[in-house]
Amino acid sequence: MDIIKKATVPLIMLLLVVVVWVGLYIYYESSEVEINPLADSYVSQLQNSFDLEELEEVSRRTKDHFPVLPEVFFTLIGRD
Image (cartoon, rainbow, N blue to C red; front, top):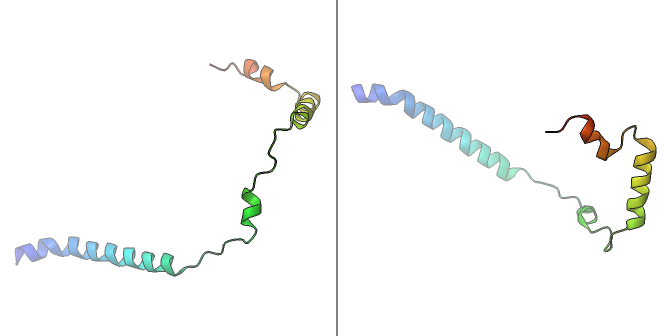
């Protein structure tokens, strides 16, 4: 009888964990996921070649509009 008293609490906790586990498994298996039909357009490659003109335009705009150039920024914050 003593072993039953000692094992009651762990068995109840184990049963509770199993019930929650099975419940969550059933819930996630029954929920349906809708995939966007336009998902292929989000992962398709934009261009086959690297556009240097666009990179130069971004670099020029960075120099024109940022108060501190990116290469100078790291020296200002004292990077270790």
